[in-house]
Length: 364
Image (cartoon, rainbow, N blue to C red):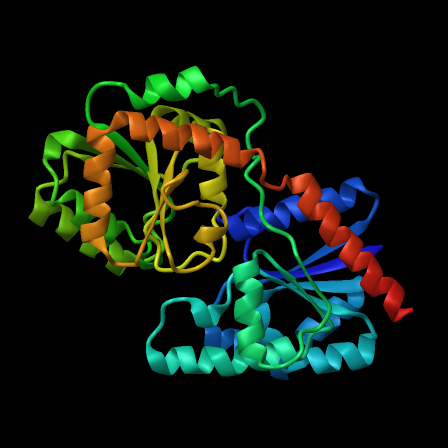
């Protein structure tokens, strides 16, 4: 099977979506499939829309001669109209790999309105859909308002570290460790990840009760980073928060080992690979009720879910966990147990490959 993958930007970019794409490509190639990656340069939404009226992209796809074309759904503005020409001229199935709907991301109402229209047209142009969560598939269904094309759900996995040895005693010792509550946030410093919510919560607590580490890029939303720095200075939090930049591989594993709690008060998460990664290390997780965090976090069992922007509720939870380390320990043990029930990359990618094979067979 010759698979074409259409995406935007550098495949080595640090984000859950790109990690998913890399894992899928590696798996398909390991099974003897040929994969041709066709990448559009990063550019504005308007520039991507212009791709629909040029012939360059269609020619690139045709030159690759794939049996089936996967489109990372972030390319949707570039192909929402062009897909009809691709289908007609190349006669291959077009499958969307949906990590996050643009219309679910934070945007002013008039821009969100445009996203919904373009995204709906895009979804209607597809022969199949791969969704990264039940929540994402439900959002797609709502946007389409009609019958879904053939589809499958293949969740991202958290087995991204070669050797992780966490046992019950280790979780207990970490939870009962003296000193401040060691909190970790793993995500680029953008508004959707909700760092400002966490900082406002910490501002309500005694400074000696916590220490926060933030692992993520600082160059993606400069205006938001300025806001965060102002928030830190105004609240007197600069000595309690460490910005580590992008952290990967074993260095990230060490962060999971060193901290006692992962907090990600995102405005929306279409799944949340870092939630699953944290559970592998026996870390409880606090997420939000928006998006798919509920598919991973069990309320008061292995973590908590708060409403987005509810820094008061988050402050109360952090206060309770700092002062009740036995509760922190129980949540961590349950998190480790929950991890065992999650999919692996092998299983998720095998599910995708079977789905793709079925679509290619059905086309012939």
